[in-house]
Length: 146
Image (cartoon, rainbow, N blue to C red; front, side):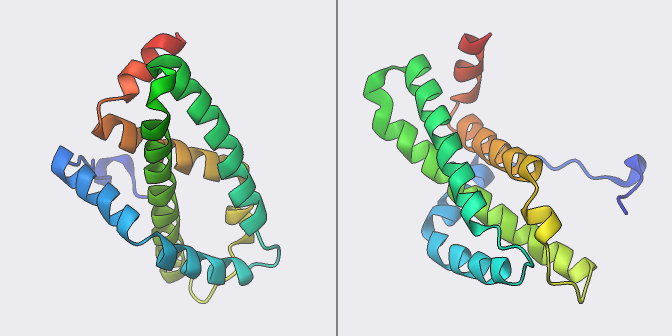
């Protein structure tokens, strides 16, 4: 169960902390994906395909919106930002699953969580927002969508 509001901590990262988090996510994407694949196989219903399909669909929307607001010459930057966001997304997902596994031991089947569309969209949105705010892009993109 979650902590009462009075005991929740507010976490704020400095710009340097955010950049470090993003860089670390870029440095180790393959091991994270391999570990997640193992966790997916522990599920009654393997969510890997829906997770990768969803990330691909969201990528198209992200790139379209990024280029629409920042200009078509920003394609390489848009690709890099989305790659950073997805690397962070997978890293955060792995960490959340590790925490839940410890909390709910001996449970290993996280099908209900990993097949939850809202969970993935929210986590990917948070990851994207972290990357964009780190590079001062977020407010620029949201101002034009008004």
